[in-house]
Length: 404
Image 1 (cartoon, one colour):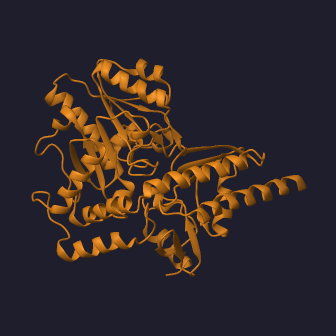
Image 2: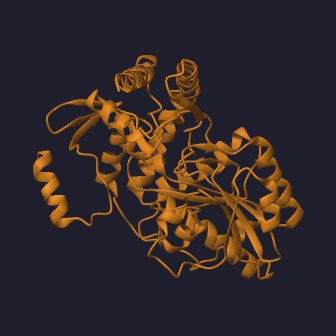
Image 3: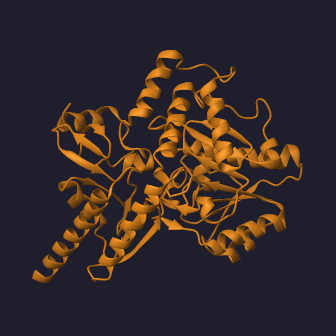
Protein backbone atom coordinates (compact mmCIF):
# COMPACT_ATOMS: atom_id res chain seq x y z
CA UNK A 1 0.00 0.00 0.00
CA UNK A 2 1.30 3.45 -0.95
CA UNK A 3 1.01 6.67 1.06
CA UNK A 4 -1.63 8.25 -1.21
CA UNK A 5 -3.98 5.30 -0.75
CA UNK A 6 -3.24 5.04 2.97
CA UNK A 7 -4.03 8.71 3.53
CA UNK A 8 -7.44 8.41 1.86
CA UNK A 9 -8.32 5.21 3.72
CA UNK A 10 -7.30 6.78 7.02
CA UNK A 11 -9.54 9.80 6.43
CA UNK A 12 -12.44 7.59 5.40
CA UNK A 13 -12.32 4.86 8.02
CA UNK A 14 -10.26 6.01 11.04
CA UNK A 15 -11.13 8.55 13.74
CA UNK A 16 -8.93 11.58 13.12
CA UNK A 17 -7.37 11.65 16.59
CA UNK A 18 -3.77 11.88 15.31
CA UNK A 19 -1.91 14.46 13.26
CA UNK A 20 0.07 11.88 11.34
CA UNK A 21 3.40 12.55 9.68
CA UNK A 22 3.03 12.21 5.88
CA UNK A 23 5.00 8.98 5.83
CA UNK A 24 3.88 5.41 5.15
CA UNK A 25 6.13 2.97 7.01
CA UNK A 26 6.40 -0.54 5.63
CA UNK A 27 9.05 -2.45 7.59
CA UNK A 28 11.81 -2.08 10.15
CA UNK A 29 15.17 -3.64 10.95
CA UNK A 30 17.40 -2.67 13.84
CA UNK A 31 17.69 1.11 14.20
CA UNK A 32 16.05 1.74 10.81
CA UNK A 33 12.55 1.84 9.33
CA UNK A 34 11.67 1.83 5.63
CA UNK A 35 8.81 3.61 3.87
CA UNK A 36 6.57 2.38 1.04
CA UNK A 37 9.14 3.50 -1.53
CA UNK A 38 12.03 1.73 0.18
CA UNK A 39 13.60 4.88 1.66
CA UNK A 40 15.49 4.26 4.90
CA UNK A 41 15.14 6.31 8.11
CA UNK A 42 17.16 6.25 11.31
CA UNK A 43 14.44 5.95 13.94
CA UNK A 44 14.95 8.25 16.93
CA UNK A 45 11.23 8.18 17.82
CA UNK A 46 11.08 4.39 18.40
CA UNK A 47 7.30 4.24 18.58
CA UNK A 48 7.46 6.82 21.39
CA UNK A 49 9.97 4.90 23.52
CA UNK A 50 8.57 1.44 22.73
CA UNK A 51 11.14 -0.02 20.33
CA UNK A 52 14.07 0.15 22.73
CA UNK A 53 15.80 -2.77 20.99
CA UNK A 54 15.14 -1.34 17.56
CA UNK A 55 12.83 -3.03 15.09
CA UNK A 56 12.27 -6.77 14.78
CA UNK A 57 14.85 -7.84 17.33
CA UNK A 58 15.66 -11.48 16.60
CA UNK A 59 15.40 -12.69 20.20
CA UNK A 60 12.07 -10.96 20.76
CA UNK A 61 10.50 -12.03 17.46
CA UNK A 62 11.62 -15.62 18.06
CA UNK A 63 10.07 -15.59 21.54
CA UNK A 64 6.80 -14.19 20.17
CA UNK A 65 6.67 -16.77 17.39
CA UNK A 66 7.46 -19.71 19.66
CA UNK A 67 4.90 -18.71 22.30
CA UNK A 68 2.19 -17.96 19.71
CA UNK A 69 2.58 -21.51 18.40
CA UNK A 70 2.37 -22.93 21.92
CA UNK A 71 -0.30 -20.91 23.77
CA UNK A 72 -1.48 -17.47 22.67
CA UNK A 73 -4.16 -16.54 25.20
CA UNK A 74 -5.98 -17.85 28.24
CA UNK A 75 -7.94 -16.11 30.94
CA UNK A 76 -6.21 -14.83 34.06
CA UNK A 77 -8.25 -17.48 35.85
CA UNK A 78 -5.32 -19.80 35.07
CA UNK A 79 -1.55 -19.80 35.67
CA UNK A 80 0.94 -19.32 32.84
CA UNK A 81 4.71 -19.61 33.06
CA UNK A 82 5.71 -16.50 31.01
CA UNK A 83 3.68 -14.19 33.26
CA UNK A 84 4.90 -15.72 36.52
CA UNK A 85 8.51 -15.68 35.36
CA UNK A 86 8.20 -12.05 34.30
CA UNK A 87 6.60 -11.04 37.61
CA UNK A 88 9.47 -12.60 39.53
CA UNK A 89 12.09 -10.86 37.42
CA UNK A 90 10.50 -7.42 37.56
CA UNK A 91 9.84 -7.48 41.29
CA UNK A 92 13.43 -8.60 41.88
CA UNK A 93 14.86 -5.84 39.68
CA UNK A 94 12.71 -3.14 41.25
CA UNK A 95 12.56 -4.16 44.90
CA UNK A 96 8.77 -4.34 44.67
CA UNK A 97 6.74 -7.22 46.08
CA UNK A 98 3.85 -7.80 43.69
CA UNK A 99 2.97 -7.05 40.07
CA UNK A 100 -0.29 -6.46 38.21
CA UNK A 101 -0.20 -6.83 34.42
CA UNK A 102 -2.33 -4.86 32.00
CA UNK A 103 -2.02 -3.54 28.44
CA UNK A 104 -0.75 0.04 28.54
CA UNK A 105 0.76 2.81 30.60
CA UNK A 106 -2.60 4.45 31.17
CA UNK A 107 -3.99 1.20 32.55
CA UNK A 108 -0.95 0.74 34.77
CA UNK A 109 -1.43 4.23 36.20
CA UNK A 110 -5.15 3.64 36.63
CA UNK A 111 -4.33 0.45 38.54
CA UNK A 112 -1.92 2.33 40.82
CA UNK A 113 -4.54 4.95 41.65
CA UNK A 114 -7.16 2.28 42.33
CA UNK A 115 -4.71 0.36 44.51
CA UNK A 116 -3.91 3.40 46.63
CA UNK A 117 -7.57 4.31 47.08
CA UNK A 118 -8.61 0.78 47.97
CA UNK A 119 -5.65 0.45 50.35
CA UNK A 120 -6.78 3.50 52.30
CA UNK A 121 -10.44 2.49 52.13
CA UNK A 122 -10.28 -1.24 52.87
CA UNK A 123 -6.94 -1.80 54.64
CA UNK A 124 -6.14 1.38 56.57
CA UNK A 125 -9.79 2.49 56.65
CA UNK A 126 -8.75 6.13 57.04
CA UNK A 127 -10.87 7.55 54.21
CA UNK A 128 -7.99 9.14 52.30
CA UNK A 129 -8.44 9.29 48.53
CA UNK A 130 -6.79 12.40 47.09
CA UNK A 131 -3.75 12.08 44.83
CA UNK A 132 -1.32 14.95 44.34
CA UNK A 133 0.06 15.08 40.80
CA UNK A 134 2.07 17.76 39.00
CA UNK A 135 1.57 20.50 36.49
CA UNK A 136 2.71 19.54 32.98
CA UNK A 137 2.59 15.84 33.87
CA UNK A 138 1.11 13.17 31.61
CA UNK A 139 -0.36 9.95 32.99
CA UNK A 140 -2.74 8.72 30.28
CA UNK A 141 -6.07 9.29 28.57
CA UNK A 142 -8.60 7.30 30.58
CA UNK A 143 -10.87 9.67 32.51
CA UNK A 144 -9.01 8.92 35.75
CA UNK A 145 -5.50 9.30 34.33
CA UNK A 146 -6.57 12.27 32.24
CA UNK A 147 -7.63 14.00 35.45
CA UNK A 148 -4.27 13.09 36.98
CA UNK A 149 -2.52 14.63 33.99
CA UNK A 150 -1.39 18.20 34.59
CA UNK A 151 -2.02 19.60 31.10
CA UNK A 152 -5.39 21.22 30.41
CA UNK A 153 -4.99 20.91 26.64
CA UNK A 154 -5.81 17.20 26.86
CA UNK A 155 -8.89 17.70 29.06
CA UNK A 156 -10.99 20.06 26.93
CA UNK A 157 -14.45 18.66 26.24
CA UNK A 158 -14.30 15.77 28.70
CA UNK A 159 -15.93 17.30 31.79
CA UNK A 160 -16.90 16.25 34.34
CA UNK A 161 -13.54 14.74 35.19
CA UNK A 162 -12.81 12.42 38.10
CA UNK A 163 -12.65 14.05 41.55
CA UNK A 164 -9.83 13.70 44.04
CA UNK A 165 -6.78 15.13 42.29
CA UNK A 166 -4.58 18.16 42.96
CA UNK A 167 -1.66 19.51 40.94
CA UNK A 168 1.48 20.90 42.56
CA UNK A 169 4.45 22.58 40.87
CA UNK A 170 7.12 20.17 39.63
CA UNK A 171 10.44 20.53 41.48
CA UNK A 172 8.81 22.81 44.09
CA UNK A 173 8.59 20.93 47.39
CA UNK A 174 6.81 23.80 49.16
CA UNK A 175 3.89 23.59 46.72
CA UNK A 176 3.58 19.86 47.42
CA UNK A 177 3.56 20.32 51.18
CA UNK A 178 0.93 23.03 50.81
CA UNK A 179 -1.31 20.64 48.84
CA UNK A 180 -1.23 17.86 51.47
CA UNK A 181 -4.34 17.52 53.63
CA UNK A 182 -5.88 14.83 55.82
CA UNK A 183 -7.48 13.47 52.63
CA UNK A 184 -4.17 12.95 50.80
CA UNK A 185 -3.52 9.30 49.94
CA UNK A 186 -0.60 9.53 47.53
CA UNK A 187 1.78 11.61 45.46
CA UNK A 188 2.11 10.54 41.82
CA UNK A 189 5.07 11.73 39.77
CA UNK A 190 7.08 11.06 36.63
CA UNK A 191 10.75 11.12 37.74
CA UNK A 192 11.40 12.54 34.29
CA UNK A 193 8.43 14.37 32.79
CA UNK A 194 8.20 13.07 29.23
CA UNK A 195 5.35 14.66 27.30
CA UNK A 196 6.07 18.02 28.91
CA UNK A 197 9.43 18.20 27.13
CA UNK A 198 11.84 15.98 29.12
CA UNK A 199 12.22 17.60 32.53
CA UNK A 200 14.04 15.49 35.16
CA UNK A 201 13.12 15.93 38.80
CA UNK A 202 15.94 17.31 40.93
CA UNK A 203 17.55 14.97 43.50
CA UNK A 204 16.70 17.42 46.28
CA UNK A 205 13.05 17.47 45.23
CA UNK A 206 12.79 13.69 45.14
CA UNK A 207 14.36 13.39 48.58
CA UNK A 208 11.85 15.98 49.75
CA UNK A 209 8.98 13.86 48.46
CA UNK A 210 10.33 10.87 50.38
CA UNK A 211 10.46 12.99 53.53
CA UNK A 212 6.84 14.10 53.04
CA UNK A 213 5.80 10.48 52.50
CA UNK A 214 7.31 9.44 55.81
CA UNK A 215 6.02 12.49 57.65
CA UNK A 216 2.41 12.21 56.50
CA UNK A 217 2.03 8.45 56.00
CA UNK A 218 1.16 8.69 52.31
CA UNK A 219 2.31 6.65 49.31
CA UNK A 220 4.69 7.58 46.50
CA UNK A 221 3.71 6.41 43.01
CA UNK A 222 6.37 6.74 40.32
CA UNK A 223 5.08 6.77 36.76
CA UNK A 224 7.98 5.26 34.81
CA UNK A 225 5.95 4.39 31.73
CA UNK A 226 8.31 6.41 29.52
CA UNK A 227 11.44 6.79 31.65
CA UNK A 228 11.61 3.25 33.06
CA UNK A 229 13.17 -0.04 31.95
CA UNK A 230 16.56 1.28 30.91
CA UNK A 231 15.62 4.46 29.06
CA UNK A 232 17.63 6.67 31.45
CA UNK A 233 20.59 4.29 31.73
CA UNK A 234 19.36 2.38 34.78
CA UNK A 235 16.57 -0.17 34.95
CA UNK A 236 14.44 2.36 36.79
CA UNK A 237 14.73 6.14 36.82
CA UNK A 238 14.24 6.15 40.59
CA UNK A 239 17.69 4.55 40.92
CA UNK A 240 19.24 7.91 40.01
CA UNK A 241 17.64 9.42 43.11
CA UNK A 242 18.05 6.58 45.60
CA UNK A 243 14.39 7.03 46.50
CA UNK A 244 12.24 3.91 46.25
CA UNK A 245 8.54 4.39 45.53
CA UNK A 246 5.71 2.46 47.10
CA UNK A 247 4.35 1.73 43.63
CA UNK A 248 5.84 2.04 40.15
CA UNK A 249 4.19 1.82 36.73
CA UNK A 250 5.79 0.57 33.52
CA UNK A 251 4.83 -0.02 29.88
CA UNK A 252 6.38 1.26 26.62
CA UNK A 253 9.38 -1.05 25.87
CA UNK A 254 8.54 -3.99 28.12
CA UNK A 255 6.45 -5.89 25.55
CA UNK A 256 9.01 -5.63 22.78
CA UNK A 257 6.42 -3.85 20.63
CA UNK A 258 3.39 -5.73 21.96
CA UNK A 259 0.90 -4.07 24.34
CA UNK A 260 1.91 -4.67 27.94
CA UNK A 261 1.75 -2.55 31.08
CA UNK A 262 2.81 -3.31 34.64
CA UNK A 263 1.97 -1.83 38.03
CA UNK A 264 4.08 -2.99 40.97
CA UNK A 265 3.86 -2.20 44.66
CA UNK A 266 5.69 -3.11 47.84
CA UNK A 267 5.10 -3.45 51.56
CA UNK A 268 1.65 -3.02 53.01
CA UNK A 269 0.43 -1.23 49.88
CA UNK A 270 0.85 -4.49 47.95
CA UNK A 271 -1.93 -5.90 50.15
CA UNK A 272 -4.41 -3.36 48.80
CA UNK A 273 -5.97 -5.57 46.14
CA UNK A 274 -8.07 -8.67 46.79
CA UNK A 275 -9.61 -11.15 44.30
CA UNK A 276 -12.08 -9.28 42.12
CA UNK A 277 -10.82 -5.83 43.12
CA UNK A 278 -9.19 -5.26 39.74
CA UNK A 279 -8.82 -7.27 36.55
CA UNK A 280 -8.10 -7.26 32.83
CA UNK A 281 -8.83 -9.67 30.00
CA UNK A 282 -5.56 -9.43 28.09
CA UNK A 283 -3.03 -8.19 30.65
CA UNK A 284 -0.17 -10.58 31.28
CA UNK A 285 -0.95 -12.71 28.24
CA UNK A 286 1.56 -15.46 27.37
CA UNK A 287 2.79 -13.92 24.11
CA UNK A 288 3.34 -10.42 25.48
CA UNK A 289 5.07 -11.80 28.57
CA UNK A 290 7.29 -14.07 26.47
CA UNK A 291 8.32 -10.97 24.51
CA UNK A 292 8.98 -9.10 27.76
CA UNK A 293 11.20 -11.86 29.11
CA UNK A 294 13.14 -11.79 25.84
CA UNK A 295 13.47 -8.01 26.14
CA UNK A 296 14.97 -8.35 29.62
CA UNK A 297 17.31 -11.10 28.43
CA UNK A 298 18.57 -8.96 25.56
CA UNK A 299 19.20 -5.87 27.68
CA UNK A 300 21.02 -7.92 30.32
CA UNK A 301 23.13 -10.10 28.02
CA UNK A 302 24.12 -7.29 25.64
CA UNK A 303 24.80 -4.91 28.59
CA UNK A 304 22.67 -2.30 26.87
CA UNK A 305 22.28 -0.12 29.96
CA UNK A 306 25.97 0.73 29.59
CA UNK A 307 25.37 1.70 25.97
CA UNK A 308 22.38 3.87 26.92
CA UNK A 309 24.58 5.79 29.37
CA UNK A 310 27.48 6.14 26.93
CA UNK A 311 25.40 7.21 23.93
CA UNK A 312 23.31 9.57 26.04
CA UNK A 313 26.43 11.24 27.39
CA UNK A 314 27.89 11.48 23.88
CA UNK A 315 24.81 13.11 22.36
CA UNK A 316 24.41 15.47 25.31
CA UNK A 317 28.06 16.56 25.14
CA UNK A 318 27.92 17.08 21.37
CA UNK A 319 24.71 19.11 21.52
CA UNK A 320 26.05 21.15 24.44
CA UNK A 321 29.17 21.91 22.40
CA UNK A 322 26.92 22.98 19.53
CA UNK A 323 24.85 25.14 21.88
CA UNK A 324 27.92 27.15 22.78
CA UNK A 325 28.37 28.16 19.13
CA UNK A 326 25.34 30.41 19.42
CA UNK A 327 23.28 28.77 16.67
CA UNK A 328 20.01 28.95 18.60
CA UNK A 329 19.99 26.09 21.12
CA UNK A 330 18.69 27.11 24.53
CA UNK A 331 19.24 23.84 26.40
CA UNK A 332 19.81 20.11 26.09
CA UNK A 333 18.39 18.05 28.95
CA UNK A 334 17.38 14.58 29.99
CA UNK A 335 18.90 11.33 31.19
CA UNK A 336 20.33 8.46 29.18
CA UNK A 337 18.58 8.22 25.83
CA UNK A 338 15.57 10.27 26.91
CA UNK A 339 16.64 13.69 25.65
CA UNK A 340 15.23 17.04 24.60
CA UNK A 341 16.81 19.90 22.71
CA UNK A 342 15.09 23.19 23.45
CA UNK A 343 15.54 25.78 20.70
CA UNK A 344 15.46 29.55 21.04
CA UNK A 345 12.83 29.87 18.30
CA UNK A 346 9.61 28.03 17.44
CA UNK A 347 11.15 25.92 14.69
CA UNK A 348 10.92 22.38 16.08
CA UNK A 349 8.41 21.28 13.42
CA UNK A 350 10.68 22.64 10.69
CA UNK A 351 13.58 20.75 12.25
CA UNK A 352 11.60 17.49 12.31
CA UNK A 353 10.69 17.94 8.62
CA UNK A 354 14.34 18.65 7.74
CA UNK A 355 15.51 15.57 9.62
CA UNK A 356 12.93 13.40 7.87
CA UNK A 357 14.01 14.66 4.45
CA UNK A 358 17.51 13.63 5.44
CA UNK A 359 16.58 10.18 6.69
CA UNK A 360 16.18 10.60 10.46
CA UNK A 361 12.93 10.54 12.45
CA UNK A 362 12.66 12.83 15.48
CA UNK A 363 9.72 14.22 17.46
CA UNK A 364 8.75 17.90 17.70
CA UNK A 365 7.08 17.70 21.09
CA UNK A 366 6.57 21.45 21.52
CA UNK A 367 6.90 24.38 19.13
CA UNK A 368 10.52 24.85 20.23
CA UNK A 369 11.42 21.43 21.69
CA UNK A 370 12.81 18.39 19.89
CA UNK A 371 12.51 15.06 21.71
CA UNK A 372 14.64 12.06 20.82
CA UNK A 373 14.16 8.55 22.19
CA UNK A 374 16.79 6.52 20.31
CA UNK A 375 16.94 2.73 20.54
CA UNK A 376 19.31 1.33 23.15
CA UNK A 377 21.40 -0.27 20.40
CA UNK A 378 22.60 2.88 18.60
CA UNK A 379 26.30 3.30 17.88
CA UNK A 380 28.55 6.36 17.82
CA UNK A 381 28.07 6.96 14.10
CA UNK A 382 24.29 7.04 14.46
CA UNK A 383 24.46 9.26 17.53
CA UNK A 384 26.72 11.63 15.61
CA UNK A 385 24.29 11.74 12.69
CA UNK A 386 21.73 13.46 14.91
CA UNK A 387 24.13 16.20 15.98
CA UNK A 388 25.45 16.63 12.43
CA UNK A 389 21.97 17.19 11.02
CA UNK A 390 21.00 19.47 13.90
CA UNK A 391 24.00 21.68 13.16
CA UNK A 392 23.28 21.62 9.43
CA UNK A 393 19.67 22.65 10.04
CA UNK A 394 20.55 25.45 12.43
CA UNK A 395 23.29 26.83 10.19
CA UNK A 396 20.96 26.81 7.19
CA UNK A 397 18.32 28.54 9.27
CA UNK A 398 20.78 31.16 10.48
CA UNK A 399 21.92 31.76 6.89
CA UNK A 400 18.39 32.29 5.62
CA UNK A 401 17.69 34.73 8.46
CA UNK A 402 20.76 36.78 7.53
CA UNK A 403 19.62 36.98 3.91
CA UNK A 404 16.40 38.61 5.05
